[in-house]
Length: 291
Image 1 (tube, rainbow, N blue to C red):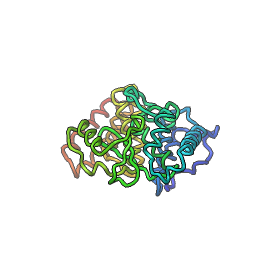
Image 2 (cartoon, rainbow, N blue to C red):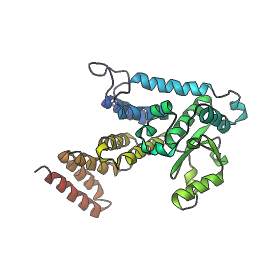
Image 3 (spheres, one colour):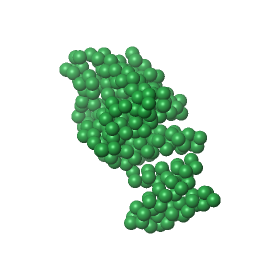
Image 4 (cartoon, rainbow, N blue to C red):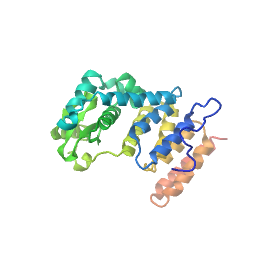
């Protein structure tokens, strides 16, 4: 825990309602904890995204995950038929699945909205599955295949997989190979079958949000907070610092953006001097916009 992160129940402003900075501090604290809570991190992303979200809304989302977990037959702990039982519960009875139009909606990357709408991107639907299964006692993990996210149960070597985006359709190792081939044109590498850690899952969620905002310059605010949350993760690409600087310039904060570009250029001096020179040139161009 860092000194600049207040306790979750600390008073918030005159109304006591958390604002975006409060949610970010909670996100940073959770991300840096010994065992980050995946559901909590995803819900905090939604709180940053949606100013109408309250702590009650986040608690209600957690309660819904608990409720769904309580509907998983207890005997599944013995039978081990987690994929089939969750497909029946979440896919058929509760209606969690995805459609192509979900890729065009920001809500599809926000866990509280996915729980409400029963629709979302593959990775968010997988988070629902993982969190419900975990609460019900399953050994479950997420698998971030290129272009698609699925869930697995038990020993990763067994490849007991399901695709929540398809309502929980069971997947074999051959299905995974076809999926990777269609997304990349290359063969499945065994390294792709390594279970994803919470931090990597959250970074991928934020990457999806950045990808959603990229062709929408009027939503550069979304791209900016997604980058800033990613920078709070203990492990993140260094280039995100430069992306943040570019977004600041795009949003008219020329001096701050130029200063951050120059700081990033200093880092790049040691590894890629040519890129560092280009970045300094862009920083000068940003400063010139002040004139």
